[in-house]
Length: 459
Image (cartoon, rainbow, N blue to C red; front, side, top):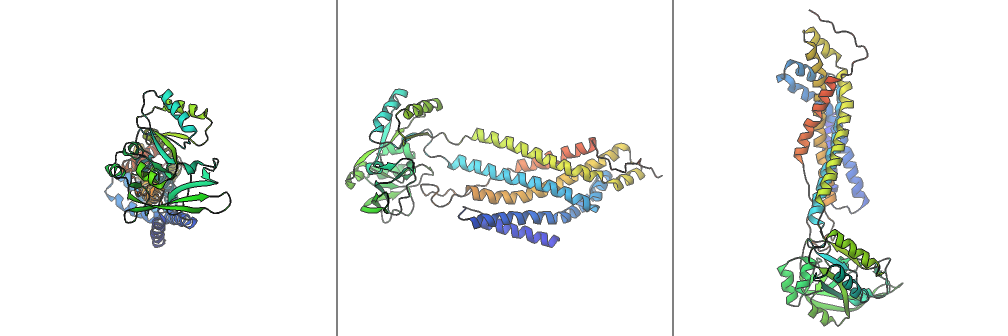
C-alpha cells in the first residue's frame, strides 16, 4: 500500500504539472483534475507509513508525550482517519491560498491596460467626438487633452450591439482582423507626445514615430522592417474581402500593457495610405479622480452614444484584494481548525490503554490530562504537515495555469510568464495555529470514552 501510494503521488505530480499552463482544451483540464485526485489519494495512502515513521521519532520526548505519540502510532486504525481529515482540510486551504495569492500578485503586475494615471475615452465617432470633448472641458477645466485619430472606415455601418463591422471597412494587419471591440483592436494615429499617454514613456516608440515608422504591438507582423496592413471590406452576409494592401516601414514594440492598440501610425504614414481618418480616442494624461470619472460617464451617457467608453488606469486594488484574501484565509483556517478538532478529539478519547499505563505508573491527574492534548497535537501537526505538502504541489500547478497567459492574451505579444507566490510564513504559522488550539481544547474539554470507569492505580 505504501509503494502504491508513493506511485500515486509521483504519477499525480507528473499529470498535474504536465497539464499546467494556459488552458487550450478540455482534455488538459481533465488531465489536471485526474492528477490532483491521484495526488490526493496517494497522500492518503501513505498516511499510515507517515504515522509509523513519526511514532519512531518520539524516543527523545518526555514520558507523557512519548507515550501519547507511540500510542497513536500503535493504534493506527483510529489515528490514520483523523490525520487524513486534517490533511484534506489543510491541503485544500494551502492550494487555494497559493493559487489566490499568485493570481492576485499577477494581476497587480500585469493587469494594467494603460500607463498609470492615464484616462482614455475611446470608441468615438466624428459626431460624438466634439460633444465628448466639450464634456471633458466642462467637467475638467484647464486639463489638457490629446486626440488620437483612427481610420474612419471602421466606424461606418457597424452593428453596435456586437461591436464588430457588419458592412463597412476596417484596416488591420496582415491576417485575420478578429475585431472584438476595445482599444486593443484598433489601429490609431498619434504623434510621439500623444502616444506617450497610450503606451508610456518609451524612447523606442517615440523615436520610431518621429522617423515616420509605424509601431506594431503584435508579434510576427514586422518582417525585414516592413509591416503589411490590409484594408478589408466587411459584408453583412458574404465573407470579408481584402480591397488594398499597404507595406509600411515599421518597428516592433512591447509594453506589458494589455490595452495598447494593435499599431500606432505616425500622421505621415497615415497620410501615405490615402485613407480617410477621424477621431479615435481622447486622451487625458493627468490623473482623474473616481468622482470626476463618474461625472464624465454620466455626462457621456446623455450624449446617447453606445460606442464610447471611459477608462482611467488606477492599477490593481491591492489593498482591497489583500483584505478579501485575508478574510477568506482566516475563514478557511477556522474550517481547518474545526476539522482538526472533530478528528483529533475522538482519536485522543480512544487512547484508554495509554491512560491506564500512566495511571499504573503513578502519574498525577494533571499529567494524565495532558495525554489527550499530546495526542490531539500530534494528529493535527502530522495532518497539517502532510496537507501543506500536498496542497503546495496542487496550488503551484493551479497558480501556473491561472497566471500563464496563452499566446496573444498579453495583447502586445509580451509574455510575462507564470507567477507562483508561496507564503511560507503563513504555512509555518498553520503548523502552530492549528495543532496548538486543538491540543488545548482536547485537554480542557476531553471527550471521555463510553466505558468511562475510574482508573485504578496498580501499585
